[in-house]
Amino acid sequence: MSEPRKEFASRNILIVFMAVILLVWVAYYFIGSPSFNKNNAVSIYGTIIQGMSALMSVAIAAVIFRIQSLENRNQALEQSTLNYIFQTMDSIYPKWSSIVEKDIDSKHLSDYYYSKICLKHPHMKREDLAKDRDNQQERLEETVDLHARTDRIIQQTKNRIMITLGFLIAPILLSFTLLMISDAFASFVTFYSVSFVILLCSFGVVFLILTLLDSLP
Image (cartoon, helix red, strand yellow):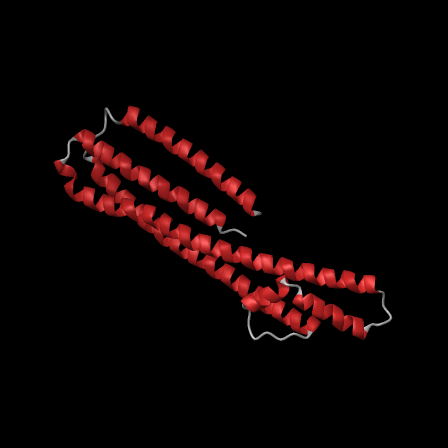
């Protein structure tokens, strides 16, 4: 999925989920508020603690697996490209670095390849050789672009998982705190406290979905 399409899909998912969360919360407020029993808060907090803890464990495992998968994909791309450069252009690089990308972007490798095949095939038309050179350059540029795009996805995923974990941890810690002091609150205060914790849980789920969606190549 291209980056503009991923951004558009992420924005649409965020809007839809926020609208659903708002409608559910409003319905919860008008229907549940008058008949809310503060004794139910204890079981609600306990359920939230268990559920969000389990979700956070799964989220961490899923994101770590996804990041490792993307990093392995980039490493395989790097190695295959270095092997291709060596076999095709007789250029040796010990590892993937900014020097490799610079030589590709500056067309140094493709120009060297062109001069080599001109000497090796003097009878061939220069137009055909130039077309072959351009094809090689295009292939290398696509590889560099894919490598950079994957690096951006990895970094974005790492950044977003920190925000996601914040939204997942916050309701757990808040539920622990409110669980111990809920008896000191009036019913309407307890209702708003429970509502706020549920709202944080909803945000955590939304950000988790967006993080996993944006980690797709």
